[in-house]
Length: 170
Image 1 (cartoon, rainbow, N blue to C red):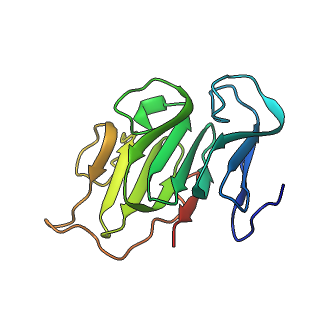
Image 2 (cartoon, rainbow, N blue to C red):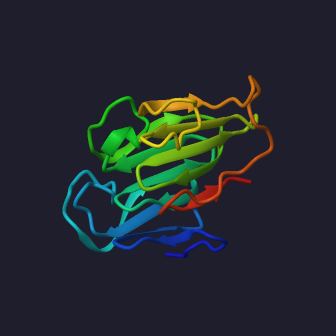
């Protein structure tokens, strides 16, 4: 098996991920909340394949995200405050498709952000302090488009959110 390079190996405090040259995503480590994505909550001491055609991967504390070559955003793991963006607060033990046409994704402690190919910014998850930028303090269970003065920010890339990391698709 040959591993790819250029930011395709990621680690967090408790779990890790790597993408092979053919785009297969492998994960391993702590799996208490399903953040490995193999359909279980059993920790893995060796890499397990969870998704194909992956271009980028991002790891949160106990959840994970991947952008595939077609721009689809998949998320899985602990879904506290709706951080996975699938419309629920149910933990997901396997990758769930959340959005399409995604170029960048960033994961925070309990919130997430993505920028689509047209430059639109979306956020979701915990919003107790207004960190989603939507003008409220209500959590969002699905990606919510953010506008500033009625205009969506363009040509931006999310930076790592509090306690998280970011990845982009080129």
